[in-house]
Length: 442
Picture (cartoon, rainbow, N blue to C red):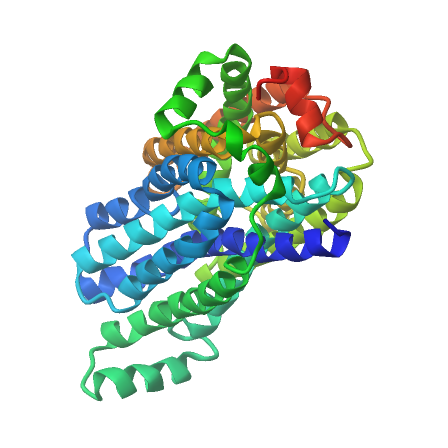
């Protein structure tokens, strides 16, 4: 495949990552508006988070989508999955009660999970050996663009935002002039979700035109049944060790990152003492830093030691949380230093290497299925950890220092395990890596 073709397909598939992160942030940023409009309790909000793209919905979708991609092909997922995503987003947009909203969050979350293993697998399989890391980084940049764009839209359309007058006009156009203030305010979230619908429609049109992965086609004759692939994945000692390694480095990092993804503005407001608008702007700037650093890493990852980049990212992440236990985030200097450091680590995070190594270290016959299984484990445990974190953190951030030490411990585990287990895959063809690790039968 030509270099331009590889880049073009990478951009098309990377929209899945934009829609994943965008769905998480859109859901989180609009929670208060839906709560006021539908009269929801904290229990209702907890359920919305639990089954969303941030947690259980994506976990369920990943384990289903991974094995489907191995059985029927990567293109099969790209042909139909965005249609499911659009149904989920439309359900949220037109929600008038809690069951509809919950259903919309769940459908969207499942679709996100279905798409992620197939997208990472396809990007690696359609890349040349000298730009596989670059293409994975491009997909991660898309993951950063999602929250950044959705946060900007959320701030512009939110009550009091620069475009809220337009939101009011649209709300009254569809709902009449006697709508309650809460109903009007909820339209700002509906419009944000509509932006995701538009991007999903574009992604569907681009992705369904993609050719099937040449790697999948070449190994189609080796494909076994779904149950057989699951059995092989769990019975092959090398595959099991690889799952344990990758799940460990990704889970320990993601337990920290998932909390930051959902609770970060809340943490800035309660522990940092800034306004909601300031918190959102700091979060938005942080995502811009992540995108910028990921771009730099994309230029280096195929030419530089993976161990060096991986170690750098984790050391910066640990430094960010050390700021909390030393300087603190009560003042603007500590808060900004933390935000910048966390942004830098996000551009060279274990998620990049998890996506890269996860598609390099498994044979094509159960490559997506293995990633789906790990994604299921990580997102599922992250959902549980999110509930535990709220108890450690407290109502007003009184447990923030204790929480910070927990985060440092998790990041240290990711650093040590990753440093010791960095595989030798840079600049090598996927079939070469597979033969070395599994022999000729795979």
